Length: 151
Image (cartoon, rainbow, N blue to C red):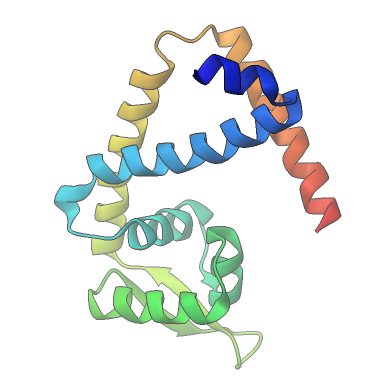
């Protein structure tokens, strides 16, 4: 049945569905691995993006990178501040801007998230030909560039 449905779809439809479902399933799998942290997916994703940035990010930039609205990010950062995982600091160049800085506890949490994500990637990619993985990665990066230009 699934193969009949797949054959009725165009290649573009199949790709779109695989991309959407793959991203959703990826997040769910990682969320399941991180359930012992007692945090929502949005919380650990926010910490991970902020920690990987390597420098404090404005809340609006953090929201853009996580893919949420600014108001949603304000609420998320409020919760993370309360949990002592991040702090807000004023920008030295624009007093209207608040920068999100990951605390030591936040960095420690990020390290746990990173270790689990690394382990999951190793498991999932173990049987994938590196050349095919490279090709798929390059395709997705190219598609992302096209989508960003269209946005």
